[in-house]
Structure formats: C-alpha cells, structure tokens
Image (tube, rainbow, N blue to C red):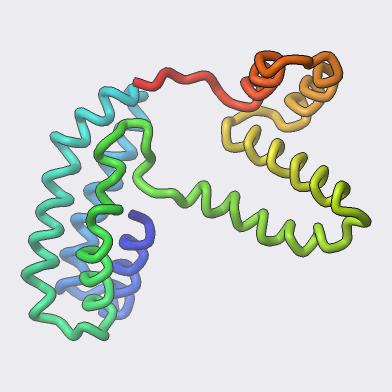
Length: 188
C-alpha cells in the first residue's frame, strides 16, 4: 500500500496541495492508515485485526477503487494523479492482500528496508577471501537481520546460538536454535 500512497502523495504535492482529485485520494489513504494505526495502538490480536479490517478498511479500499475507476477518465493518464490512479487499479488485488489475514501488515516497507541492506552487503561480500567466507558472512548477516525484524537483540541471540550450535545433532536441535531468532506469536 505504501507505493500507492506515495504516488497519491506525489500527485498531491504536484497539485501544490490544492483541493482536487489528489487531495480527495489522500483523505481516503489517510483514513486507511489511521485505522491501521489504531489497531496497532490498541493491541488488536491478528484475528481481531482481520475482522476489523473487513468492517472498517475494506469499504474504504472499495470506495477508493470505485473513485479511481470514475476519476481515471477525468485526468491525464501521464499526469501524477493519472499515474497514481492507474497504479491503484492495476495493483488493487495486491494492495488489498493485507485484508485477508490479520498477520499481514498494510505495507512491506520494513522488509524492503531489510533487503536494501543485503544489496549493500553484496558489495561488501566481494571482498570475502573465499566462497566459504562469503557464505559465512551472508549467514551471519541473515541471522542478525532476522533477529532485528523479530525485536530480538542480535548480539544476545548470536551469543546463545553460538554457545549451543556445537551441541546440536538433530533437526529438532536446529529448529530449537531457529526459534531463538523469532518472537513467538499465535497464528490467530
């Protein structure tokens, strides 16, 4: 959803924040994000968040789709608002995927930021002396990022994993080590 929001915001800026199509779109986008923030602030469970989204967010998403379909013929396709409208309509199925499961976030900005670090790491890995060194470096990087994503202290997790890994002999042992990286949450 963040890419769609950015396109509408860019259209809003291009319109010099004047009333019009971009402002109308931004008010709907803001409403969606405000509701999502409220769910997070009030500590909704995944199940409750999914049900609330169907009641609160889905109608706004559908209204916005209808608005985009109507607006599409009234704006220049190559203009900022035309580009934003086209993107929303073309990506609607993907933009609404978060409505299907309360575990899904409204956008994937957090993972895109994590992946960006891997792109930077690629350049650093060019200087690993061996293939095994590059594999070890990328493995540690992956473990550290996974710990951070799950709100774990990477240093503490690495110390614990490294102190136990020599004793791991079975798949179950390794699965227990992997559990140290992730926060335990229920699927619902």
